[in-house]
Image 1 (cartoon, rainbow, N blue to C red):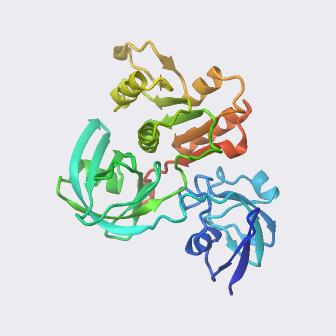
Image 2: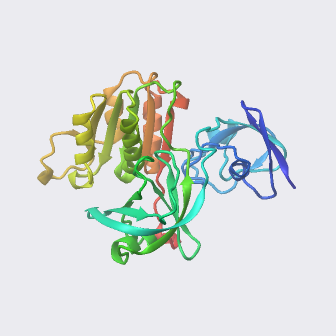
Image 3: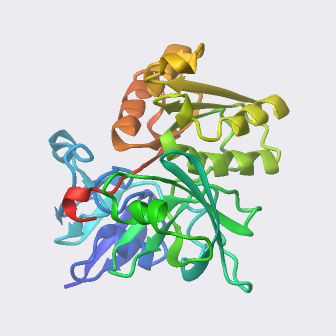
Amino acid sequence: MPHQITIQPSGHSLQAQADETILQAALREGYALPYGCRNGACGACKGKVLEGSVDYGAYQANALPQADIDAGYALFCCARPQSDVVIECREVGAAKDIQIKTLPCRVQVMDKRADDVMVLQLKLPANERLQFLAGQYIDILLRDGRRRSFSIANAPHNDEFLELHIRHMPGGHFTGHVFEKMKEKDLLRFEGPLGTFFLREGEEYDKPIIFVAGGTGFAPIKGMLEHAFHVHDRREMVLYWGVRSLQDLYMAELPAKWQAEHPNFTFIPVLSEAKPEDNWQGRTGFVHEAVVADFDDLSGFEVYACGNPMMVEATHKGLSAKGLKEGSFYSDAFLFEDPSKGN
């Protein structure tokens, strides 16, 4: 039985079909709600249920703790209406007019930048281009029906290839294939662009920006920064890139180059497990702790964070304690393959 969904504060109204999640219904009707993983793990789609009841679906407890449920919140990527509902969330206007496509592509370049990081350049058919926003992702479609999500690491103006940064996860089905069997010229299929993690632009977005990347969470932030530089964005921007040891800064030369070329950009790498041979003289510890240490009041900033869920959650919590406003935190939590689940 269909149920009506009303979105506040916009007042937009739509119908959810039987067994359809709130997010699925909204996207089908052309309303772009914030989302990331689409499987109840990252928390990017969290919003409030003001009226009506929902089936919360399957989700990870750290993305929706009981205290949030008690306060009326749900994850819209897995919550299904059980009655007509009124929800509260901010809609994302910039993504709604971009067409999501399923396309073939060819592996044009494989560039192993670290022992466990492969940078792929994917070439689309000659008559195709993918319109996307800096920071969005694509889903690689595997032959068995499974999907693997990877952020687009290039900026929209530089769209001859799609660039992906892939970390090898031991026992991982797809990442193992990339590192052990994949060859240049291989064919893949993907769906995209997806996600609402992208650089916000316009007159209302004039605050200085802090980017926080963990590991290959650098990928979408690379695309955002390249876009910002291309359009001569004058906002003050600082990138904190947290990794374990020096070898994990697999593209350190690039943000170092940006810092030399753009007076409004600062690069701060942070190592959590620096090796003696690294001879590291820079920042150490967890990346979010470096940000917390550097700022007393974050109420006038916007933050874009990308990395594993624990890192994103710790960043949000730590920076919120320094005054960061809820609507000024944008995130994408990477969910890696879990070999124990047959991925």
